Each structure stands twice: as C-alpha cells, then as structure tokens.
Image 1: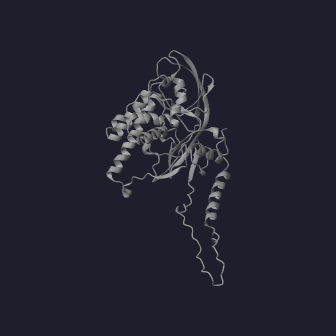
Image 2: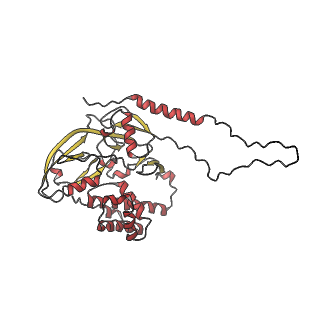
Image 3: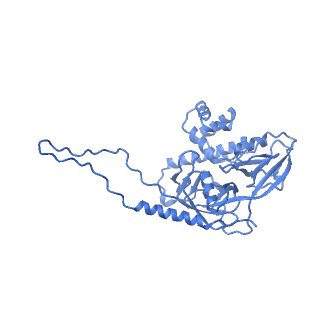
Length: 366
C-alpha cells in the first residue's frame, strides 16, 4: 500500500512557528540609550549630544508567506513557508510530509491532474494551491528511432528531474503506449539522468542515430483513484498561473520577490503604453520559448524570461551574443544561428512587429 499520509505535526509546527515569530515581532523593544553629557561647573558651555543621521531608512520586516499544499494522489493539506527558490520549496513539501525530496517529480498549481499547462514555474500566486506529484510506477520500453525526430518536448522541475511536457501526435513516442505526459525520464540505455537538466536530456535523445534501438526507463507520477478538486481548465495554461492579485516570483539567484500581477477591471491603473509593454514582453517570452522547443526540444519559461530580460536592454545582436557568453546561459551551448534567431524574436517584440500568430507554430526537432 502506498504511503499517502505524512506527519501532521510538521504542519502544526509550521503554524506554531509562524505564530511564535509574529508574537516575537510584537514584543516591545528596549529603549535606546541616549548620549549623556557630564555636568560642568559653568566655566565651559555644555555641548548638545551628537545625533548620527541614518541615510537609509529601516526596512520593514518581510512578511512570512504561507502556502497550502497536498500530494496530488491524495493527502492531508500541508502548510509550507520560508522558501526562496524551487529546490527549497520541494524540500519544504518533503519535510511537511516526512518523505525524501527525491520522491517529488514536479508540482502543479490549482489542480491535482497531470496538466502540463499548470506546471509550477518561476512564480506562484499568493492564493495558489500547490499539488506535489510524487514518484509512481517505473516503466521501461525499447524504442527504435525510425525517424529523425522522436516527437518529445522535455522540461524539468528545477530540482534534478527532467520529464515529458509534450508528445507530438503520430510521432515515434506517441506510438509507444508506456510513455505518457508527466513521465520522468530516469534512464536511457541504463545511464541515469537524475540530476540532468532538460537540455542535456534532449541533447542525448537528439544524438541517438536514426535506426538505433534504445531502452528508455521512465517513472510516471503516482495516480489517484478519485478526484477531490475539479476546476475548469483553460486551453492557454499561462493564463491560470499566478492568477491571484500578487505572485511570488522565484529566482535561481537572489531572493524571491512579491510582484503585483492584478489586471482586474477595478484595479486598472496602467496606461495603454504600460499594457503594450507587458503584451510585447509576453509575446517575446512565448516566442523565445517556442524557439527553445523547436531547436532544442525543451520548454522553459523561466529561461525564456531570462533571455528576454537580457536582450531587451541591448541594441544589437553582437552585444546580445557577448552577454550570453558571459552569463550562465552559455552552459546551454547555443549555436550562433540560434542566438541570431533569438535576437530576431527580441528585436521584433521591441519594435512591435511580433503578434500572437507568430508564436503559435513550432515543430519538435528531436
């Protein structure tokens, strides 16, 4: 029987810790000591105490954000807080349910289903509910690469597991009944891929010679026999991620930040120019992600956002290529032609030439 219930005491400890911290913040602080000046006999003038100016105002204490989570196949509701990146978030969930962090394959927001449009990425709405999908049944099958492309799109959870986000219809992998969306690619021909990034797995699959038969081992998310949260799904996944008024943006480097993402009618304070900038940014990120998927077989919105943020500040492709070479993005090994394609998408978005029809079509190339 699968273990689905963790220790409730972990959640209570988190709540108790939150209450204790709040109480400690309310305790009165001791009065600051004042500079005392010794009395004189009147022969010298008493000097007033020196007041040191503090140019930087004291920062208010950061709020402790609390999120609710469950295991997707069924569990009590847990409470997690105090994380600044995806790896820390996974560790908090693992601690909450007293299980190894290696058991978590990926997380979805506001649905327990294996819905690739609801994957937890670089941001979480402050009202979003987190569902953790844990390791389930391992599966192994032989695949013959009879065509140049297998038809897979790979992404990863940011914590060491690469998994399948999309399978092209009528492709080689689509005809393999054991391989499904959300499956973690654990091994290829016996070589472990645990800890590999999505682009490394995609590159390995792409380098398999046409006509070769290889063995792939995948691990599917644990499935439940019941449904306890049903929500209407949207065809466009990005519209449901971070749907609250504020989102917590997670970064690979630096602290997480809370950003306002509201676009409700009652809080429309943006100008038309601001909206146009946001639209062009979203189109650029979608286009860049489409290029990553077409040329490398990976899907990574956070990486696309990083590429856009870098290119948006530059004026020419040479500076853009140099910036990539000096950043951590160089580890992806982008070819020069691909870098110029990325710059083309950035340039089109900055000049307003990019529209929604330009970001829909792509084809897997591995």
